[in-house]
Image (cartoon, rainbow, N blue to C red; front, side):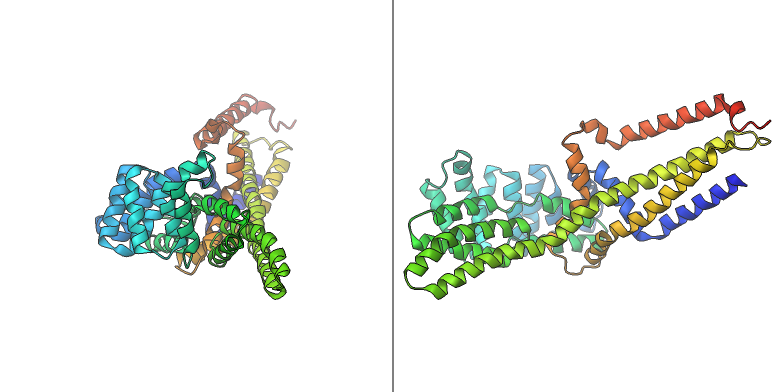
Length: 423
């Protein structure tokens, strides 16, 4: 009777787990976070698309392949083919230039600026060819070419980092070909280059100068970025530059008798800082929930494993013998752990699942929301810095669990006359 009760309860838990898409997705996301990397996800997506004859001639697919392919030669080939077929995809040159860093891509930078000449981000990407070497050498912006490039960036009329385009491309590929996921997008967005360091350092350089015109240039550019930013990193950098410029502008404006203008500058700088704390609140909630999802998945697996072990031991006991008295408590504990984990996993992954549904249905999703979705990878990412790589490979733990099961069965078989013996 005991064995049948356990079997029934395990079956009910399994059905609950399989019926709920939130539970399935939560467990899958946790599993993927430990066993997969952005490279493995990208390779899988690329392989699937390249086997699709219809996809091979689709400019958007070619653009997507260019962005996820790790091989520089293949990425360049896909990118050129995509842009040649659809000039609206010229924006893909920006992340490719910054991610690949090969000399031939300077021509891409020129095409990008020709296509989007008023965009500060495009100009910053182009200017990175002149400035990155200077920055890494610690020469700041003493080089005339670098300084000239950054002046063009700060004089641009708008700021667009192309991240919304990246999301729409991913959604289109997902809807039309079933390739990609919000998790894979979040991983790639987390690595998306934003050229923040270049303009942030140049902005601080201007704010530290003795020219009020430079202070205004730094402040207005940072304000422009703050208003158009799609990620918290850009907002932080913009708020930092605004604060540096405001510290010079406010006293100068007050000294000139422009107290009203000084107040506007001070309020705008404070508002930029406040925007960060308001927008970032959701991210903190996601980061706090991610370990819960990971823990609940581990507990669910541990509870289920305990039930499996109990079932194996119960089968080992001879039919005429009553089960040992410790089998029932172990089964109850395993069942309690699994049941609690089911509820915790459901509630913990619910906000992630809501974002996944919005993304999959093609609804508007901001880049920062998808980066928040990627916080499910926060725990594995932290652990990977302290644990040897081979311990994070899923096959290692397959071996550990398998060996444990073999030892348990061997112990049970060897000691079966002593299990549950009733005189």
